[in-house]
Structure formats: structure tokens, C-alpha cells
Image (cartoon, rainbow, N blue to C red):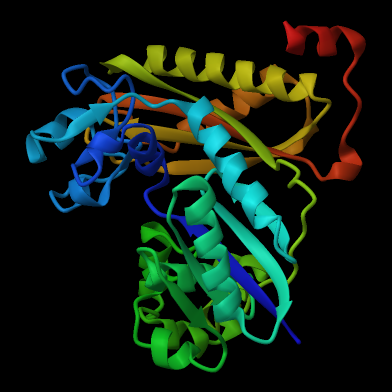
Length: 358
């Protein structure tokens, strides 16, 4: 038997959970986000049912905009505990099969399986999830995680698709690099500056050129991504977090630079204290700024040395903030800290542990 990677992705998960407990909503445009009140400001769509998406409603859109596009939609507040419980049901169902389940979030998991017919296994998995949870899923089949993840996009909704080295070029070569897992709009622009706009062009690029532009590690990774290369390991050991973040959406846009800096320092200090309470150290600080236009750049900087000092993290966040154009109203600020490798982790002091539990 051969080793296969299956990527299970629940269809419109949050909306589907809401419809499951409110069957009368089936077939209606459903939008979930914030308090569920589209008349309130500063609230965004968490997810939308396929019916709502046909009106142009999508995740991250302000609820007010969603209401304008689809006034007949049913708006509901988010309910994370319900989604936690539903996710557990799904993952427990998957674990009843002879597979290794690596959970990646509420609505997705990679499965590792030895089988001669991955399509049959995928069909059985889909049927079991639907029968036991009343939730639909799509399954991508691949010879590594990258291809399995991308295959799921072709499987949606409620389907199964196989993407391997055998059909990689036929399926992916002509597609824009933006379609690859891990390449966003900003990186696709960077690649376009090198004349690399399609997956085939990225696969055929000079690795040295990519490494010179993006660094030896990331340059090599992008080159491999163009060829569909990826990890084949699947583990059921919970993933160790590699970062922590905090962000605030302000009731009123910030326009004063001093106030913006004060708020950023507050956020950086709070997230650092959370991390120190867990006994972790910080090696990189990222700052996220969302303008009133919803343009949301993110920039980061490595600390001079690994630290647990909130003042040092706050100072670095201000250095990163200086890279942003602050002559426009700011809607949201966020700070993300990346952890040092596990070998640099320390145990929290008793007073820190008590503080984190209060």
C-alpha cells in the first residue's frame, strides 16, 4: 500500500454549524460575524454561506457592507464554543478510521493513510462525517501536504480531488503563482517583479535568483513550491504554537500619531506579558496596521537578541511602526511576537504562572 496525504476541509463550517442547529435556515443566505447586528460599526463577516457568497459577501467584509449586498441575509453572532464542540465531533469521527489525524483548526485537518485506493477512503470519510455530524466536507488527495491542500480547492464544495506529481503540470503550470498555498498578493507582486507570474515560471526559475531576493531559506522554499514539493509527514501530536498576537479594532479611527504609538505600546506590552507567563522568549516582533480603507500591511523586525522584556518588545514595535505611513486614519493595530526555538524556552516563575491564571 502507498502513503497518501488527505486534506479534509469542512464546507462553510461556521455557517454550516449555525444551519445545523437552525434547520429552517437551510438554503437561505446566512452571514455570521461579530454580534450579528449589521447596524453596528466595526464588525466583520466571519463566514458566509454559499447562498450569501453568491451576492458577493465574503469573510473580512464589514457587516454593513454585507447587508447592503444581501439585505435578505440572516445575520447571526459568532459562537466559538459551538464551533469548538462541532470540530471535536468531526475530528473524533476521522480518528475512527485507520489514519493519522493532524488537526489544523476548527475546520481542517491533514490525514496520513496507507491505502491502495485513497478515493475510496475519502468517500468513506466524507460519508461518515456527514452521517455523524450533519456537516459536509471536501477532501483533497495528494502525495504531500502542499498538493493535498491545493487539491481541496478543486474539490469544493463537497467533493474529492487528487493532485500529485503525475498531474501537477497539467493542473497547475498555467495558473498564477497567487493560486499556490502560501503565496499572497504581496508576494505574488514581488515574484512578478522577477518576471515570475505563473506556477510554471516559478518552477523553472533560477534558485540562486530567488535566494538572493528572498533569502536562502525562503527562496528555496518558493522554488520548491512552484514544483509542488511539500512535507509528507503527518503527526497526531498537537502542534506547538510558534507565535502569539493581540490586536484591537478601535471604535473610532485613530489619527493622532502619539495616540497610535501609545496604543501600540500597550498592545505589545500585554502580549509580551502573556508570552512570558508561558515561559517563552521572543525573537521577532511584527506590527499590523489596518487603515480605514481596510488596506492591512504587516511588517516585522528581529530583536537584537532573544528577550522577555516588555519594554524591549514595545521599543521594537515602535521601530517597526516607523516603517508605516501614518498620515491616514488607523482602524486596527496588532502586534505579533514569534517565539524563540524550543531549546530556548524557560519555565515560568511562580509569580508569572499565578499572573497568567488570574
